[in-house]
Image (cartoon, rainbow over all chains, first blue to last red; front, top):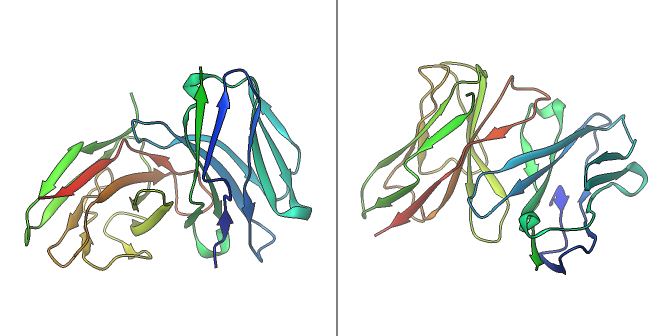
Length: 115
Length: 113
């Protein structure tokens, strides 16, 4: 069974629009970590954020914000006022410390921001 | 400048040939990982190493081999037993094996001639 689901395969938005990337996860552990990574066309995965399961506070970093809701097992990522440089594939990942540090990645959402 | 380097950026393999992908880190991280990425898919774990001289199979280890003789190096060999090696290979490292963020290198794209 897929532990991390990113149902949106591809999204296109016009520059300056807001966009939300969805991430739904599945785990039986009470302690776990959630991550978002950005993969630009160059290929390298760039770390964006890490949240632990005990911290449900939403986080904002510039134009990026994350909404963590344990009740719906979701960890969604919003980009406000999107820019062309935001065009990339975004991956959500889950790690469960009880099984070491193996990451479970979603299949990614490809975001295209049209100028 | 700390980071993870992978070489080469592109690698071509002939039928029946073994090739080795390099991964080096100067972050003083104990744990290192190899992932494979196919188009439209997420990352799948090939091998990981928690500490020097130790490594474990991941989800898709068949046809691959690794070594961890030095803390900063974790080379991956794609053997002739791997029948479908064309993919993007990413190396990562983390401070330790548990609970730590993984940081990734720039990747190596392997193509079969």
